[in-house]
Image: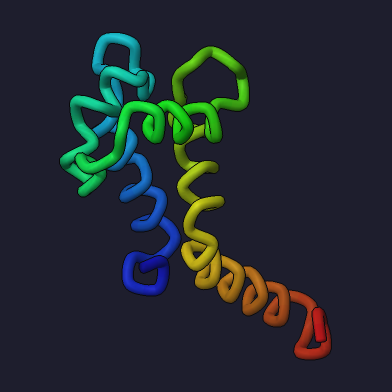
Amino acid sequence: MADKLGEDGLMEELCNGFRLLMDPRRRLITFDSLKRNAGLLGLDGLRDDELRAMLREGDTDGDGALNQWEFCVLMVRLSPQLMEAPRRWMDQASRETFGPGFMS
């Protein structure tokens, strides 16, 4: 996915996903907004306890909801393959900057 979208495209898609799921008044993903919008991402089969577990897993500040940063971190953690392309981009930039023997 990251290869197809590029770095900026990947971040834009993560932000779009956040906006789809968030409560527009609070600008956070709450349990209610996640439950209401989960079907948009094919998650409509999840039980309430599974949705709450998703929120807990990503909720680093303990407020019971996900802000945009928490959502993006959670998506990357749940999909490590998302980071393969950015890692290659970083490796290539490092080799170009520091020479071909860097990070060998």
